[in-house]
Image (cartoon, rainbow, N blue to C red; front, side):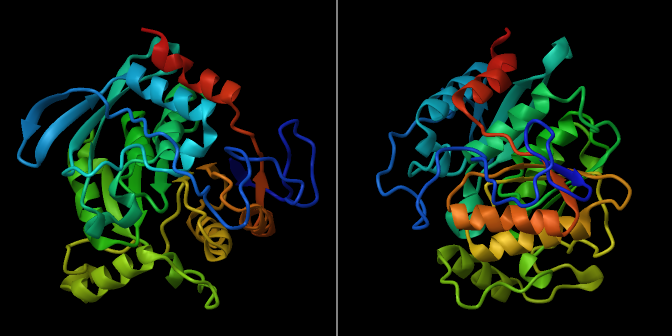
Length: 333
């Protein structure tokens, strides 16, 4: 994670001149070609029985132990971090994640609604990095500037980390993505938050903050975005689109910035630091980012750009031991 400053630092606090002195952020490095070609064995915290039903389908309760067991399996087979927690062919579910807080402060329950791929793109399911970041927030809530803070999640997917931050005491939370239909689903989740009046979804398209690299080949994710924006079109007053989701005001600033598994391309490596700089509170801001190394070149560029816009970067290699320490809280009861 990083704070606004002048120079990056490694785990021991020593200054480093360039982010090219790279520590693996999450898992073993992969080639510049991207994800491994062999899909790992599926495992999911969703492999528990559904409890009850809602108007949107079965609601699944995910226990702290199920979350910990899943992340520990991922830690033993790190390639598993490159795939969603559950991508099985099934209807979207409403899910409730119960997370234990360090220090015996009591559990929090975070409601997350899933959606169809055409609505959420790759954000249609929770990903391991989002789940791990949420556990990390719960394990470190006492030492993080959560209470009363303004928090934002960038490239939110289903928004689990931001919703977790809200449950842990963040005072004003914005959950952002570029897909209007996805954000409509996120709003349903926000309505079930402990303090729903303090949680809101907002449109934020990184392409409007920093232009993408035209030479890059984009995936079907870009097609989902283009189709949704075309369908939504301009909406009514207040800048809302046809899905009723307003854009994030350009002047909004935040104390806590969250993102997980959002660097998929060189464009993302350039754009995310620019978005973070624009959204960070000028006096003091903390960015907590869970970023798997899908490409060493992209990750190095991302870290260089963070340092260039004034963030002091602290890196941690998320090893099996690191994961064990984070999820230990979820195994206490």
